Length: 300
Image (cartoon, rainbow, N blue to C red; front, side, top):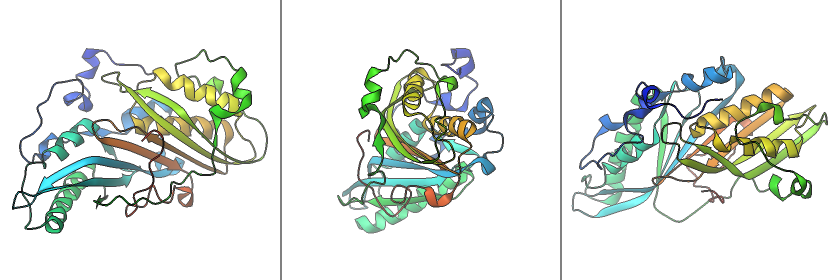
């Protein structure tokens, strides 16, 4: 499987510009620090050769520590929610986004908070849209109001009694762990045991995965949890893990409907929540609504 790269390999990757290196926090607005990473690099490893026909979806980012100043020096703080399509050719590398957003911290914009936020949102939207070659949506939240989370009726895999008798021994991705149950129906399950690692720094990324399936075959729940646990030593970005899970289950089951959503724990004040589906109406309603800040889940 695709494990952590050697230093020689890393030097040729765009994401290695900042990851794993000591970088000073920018003192002023600096869009040049943003780094785009091609999605194609990882998709080719798992034969995701026609992503536009395999799935649709989006990547949702929450920047929980965003701040700037008004022209009078008054700090403005809140949460940014950023959304862009899974069909974009690139993703934005998260450390570069953190540093870019931090570059607004001591800059002054507008005569009052509302005017300042409006100016800055327009700047960020233009910078990210140009970087990623796609439309980027962005909203600012400064009130503690949350809409309902989307997964209240999902069953937690690791709480099942049958799981308690399983011995877990594999921690490197193994698609052969997945077993079809040959049972027709609908499956809504999740696990808080998702862990993968950054492909450059090997730092752990913690999260939850929510899986919706409908079709003539379901996945055996014990085998599914074993598979999720087998990702523990895999080195991928969050978006890549979501697409890997999607591809494995799609190939195994050929489902009528499928939706995979990964909710990762914030790092550097940012969390990344990719979701992929074969039907747009299955996308998590509140998570993917740019105008809603949905209730935090355990791993956020």
